[in-house]
Image (spheres, rainbow, N blue to C red):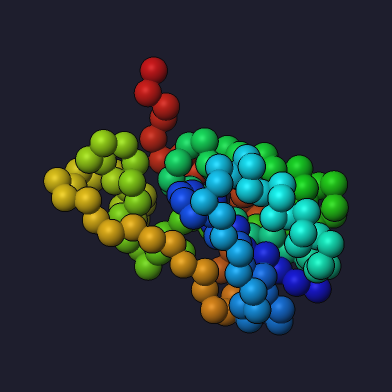
Length: 150
């Protein structure tokens, strides 16, 4: 049984395949999540028996979060795979994450808030080399952080 981690919050989309909690393979795509996820998972499902899918549920791109959640939730229900999640800060060493304009999400010890940065902080996501499934939650609802601008 394998576990899969999906980080679809920005480009490139990242996928890690884990065996016995150790990263054994990575895949990435600069395509839109709606295009990349079905193609990548078509191949993954042909090659691996998947027990858990873990995804970064936000904050990040609203559309990417929505697409990833709907795709992964549906796939997991159809294939009887457990879906787990965590916030995106788990995958970027708690660095600021772009929200809109000069506004960035930051994680404090109490909450995820927004803060203005005049200079753009570096932002990259990374797949962990090792997984601890206890780090992830069955609360998989997307976290947007701020409401859509109306």
